[in-house]
Image (cartoon, rainbow, N blue to C red):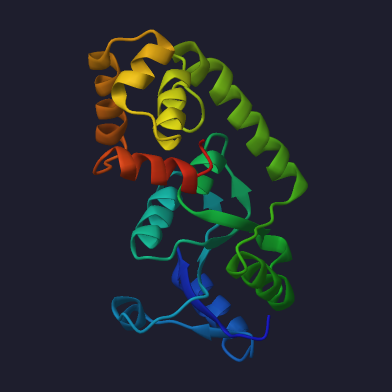
Length: 213
């Protein structure tokens, strides 16, 4: 990637903040952002946050969420340990790549930033295995008993959205699925309310964009 990557560094301790900034300050592949830059609308993509911590716990997840709300949608996380249950929360908060702190050389950090800025990501094999195990456990023990998938949509909601996307109106959907029109309307209302969408067209666009249907 020849284009410089805009990078916002957020460490949970001052020493790590200074150390990582010193490590990356003169790298030609990156441009370090300040708090003032984040508040500006002039920051262009690709833009990545680099969060540095010792232990990934609830405090770290809160920091990740605050960085995500700042508009940094892609995050590289540098950490020594990840507590059980925190990896999935970190990924949901925007983490795309994880670099073990003991291996966080300038080259590895730049590579992770480039990978993340390109829209990809990378996890060490042990963390990837733990993440898949946590997702599987969540699906089996939390979502499946309630008829939900990892997307947060039930099978019925997904089917209704598919039919709306195919151009079917409420009566046609009700006839096809054997529901009342009121039930179909309630399903669509539940979807738009829960996902904070404006209308059924917005719901279909969201589902298509997220690969849900």
